[in-house]
Length: 450
Image (cartoon, rainbow, N blue to C red; front, top):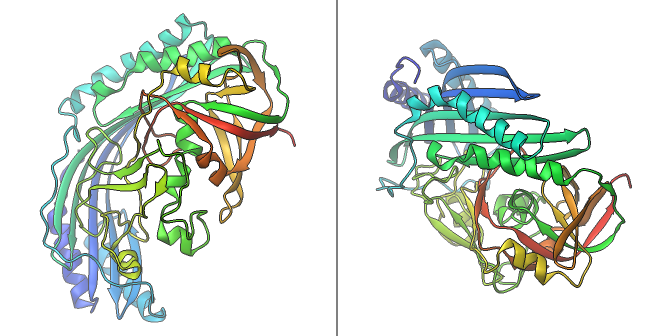
C-alpha cells in the first residue's frame, strides 16, 4: 500500500469541516488502493505498471439538498476548499424531493470469507509467469497470438456517516482477460476473476481462448432468422443478467429500466431464481457495508420466475414503503454480485435439448446498445467464436450476425440453465455476475450489417 497518509485522520477532518459548514447529513468513504497491471499483445508483455491512490468520496446533505464530490488530491487545503465549494453548490440547488434520509446506525457487520488474499504481495513475483502460462496454453490449443490484461489490486476502505455508521474493510481483486487468434477472423476469448489469486485459473483461460479461436477457422456468414441460442457465461452475464440488474427503482424512475410495474409478475420460467448477494466468498462485488454504512446481505430479485422486488438504499426504500437492502451507492442503489442459482444441465445436455431447432452457440459479445431502455429493445454483436449447433453438436463456425431483441423476451425465453457457475466481470459486464451457460428459445438474429 502507498506510504501511509492516515485515513482515519482525513475522514475525521472531513467530518469536522462538514459540520462547521452546516451540513445536516453525510456519508464519507475513504479508499486507499495499490494497483498493478500487465498488458500483453502478440504474445509479448507490452506494459507493466503500478499506481497507488487515496480517494475520498463525500455524500452530503444541507437543507435537504444533496451533493456529491470525489477527491484524489487529499491535502488539507484541497479538502477544505473543495468542501467550501460544495456548500456553495448546495446553496444554489433546490431541495431533493427524493431524499428521505440515510440509514440510522450504529451497525454490526457480516463477516465474509475470502475477501483479501494473504499472499497478495507474493503475487507480484508470480504475475508474469501466470500471464506467460496463459499465453502458452492458448498456443498449445492452436492460437498463433494472444493479447489481454491482468490487473490486481489491494484496497483499504473506511466509512463514517452522520447517523453513526463506522465501517472498514480490506479487499483484494484479480482480473484477467485474454483474447487469442489463429488468424484475423478466427479468435476466442476468456476471463478469470476473483478476490484470491488461487481462484484465478490462468491456464484455463488461455486454453479456452485458444480452443475457441481454433474452432473458429473458416467461419462463413450466418443467416438471419429465429434461433435458439446457447450463451456462454460471459455473454449471459451481459444480456441475461441485465434484467435482474435493471431491478432498480432509480433506473425505473428515470426511464432506464424495462421492469416498471412488473413486481409480482412472472418474468422468467419457474426454474429461474436470482439474488443480489453481497456475501459471496471471493465475490468481486462482495462487501460488508454499502455507501451509507448499512450492512449488506442476500436479497432475492427473482424467485421461481417471479420478480420479487428491487434493490434499495434508504431513500428509495422509504419511498416504496420498505427497508434498505444494503445496496446504497453515492447517488443511487447499486448491485453487489448478481447470482443465478444453477440449473441441472451439463453443457452437452444443453446442446442436446436444442437439437431439433436451429441453434447458435455464442461465446463472446460486445457493443450491447439500446434503442429503448424503457421497453428493453436492444442489440448486441457476437464477437470471437460463434457456432451453428446441429443435432446437438457444435457443427461449424458462423459470423456476421447480431442479436436484435427485447430484454423481456430474453429473460422470459430462458429454456435451460447449466449447472456450472462462473463468476464474470469484464468490460461489458460491470457488475460481477455468477451465471452458467444459458439456453434461450426463439431469439431474433439479424445481420450484423443491417
